[in-house]
Image (cartoon, rainbow, N blue to C red; front, side):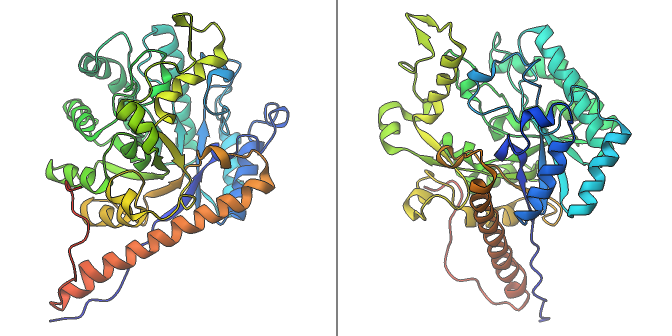
Length: 413
């Protein structure tokens, strides 16, 4: 037998710029829209991040959702009230070169199947601006949601996706881009009882959407930016999701990761179960939707009553929670990805997304050590998983040496 060299493959670790919306105050960034990106690239270098996921969003002055109704502040680090020009892109790319921090992709997280045709058109037009900016900035992909037309069932939304979303993917293909879908169900988007307001919330729907895309020649454009926090929200575990994708013949669908956790609240689950809080949330007053937009943010109690987001590294090590799918087992997450997915790990983005409420301080110096710790944790976890995989799946088998034990198994809890 021939010895195989030990050659672990590590992922690049980045951070979503929505972690600190006010790094550049709005009264500074509104008149100088690219200043916010320069500031974030410099900040990311201080955090020792390899990349940023550049957050784009409709400016508050043109958004269809009032700021006070949102769970999080608006994070339009990339300001596209005006189109991104070559001159704007060159300014940003100069900051990329100076800091050594890459732009992994651009994230615009909105409902692309909104039921109001006029509102949907605004969002699609903005997404096309995001596509064009991604090309000028040399990004391989954009990241976002599919969304849902609330006037239709999820089944009927498949036809809406084919009619309305596939043309967006054709525009992405024309520009050489991937569209990476994050799978958050977005329960707080509506004030009714609907929990699944982004139809691409689970592998079963990913595959259904992918098959539609294949028929239209844009299968290579649809990919998943997997976020394990949403799996915890729905009682799933990462290893079983990855195994399911392999079993169904699509282990290539995932092309990036958000490292954002979720810690299930046993008391909240006892009260509401995984369907989330259905009444008494505060978004309805006197039997009808509240007239105060700020009350609409309470629709997110569907989610927050049963789970709380985790910034990687901030939740206690809890083996029982890992085994019962009530918190993310980060080591097994990264190990399972290597064992079960088809992914270029040295190129795929591993993006820290910060939504742990008590730590979402909007002060630069206070947030800096928190993000530094999380990014360092994420990097070391990935390195540990890469080393385990290289040793157990490459070095030992080459010499006929068995791996010890059983390990976590898919579909078993």
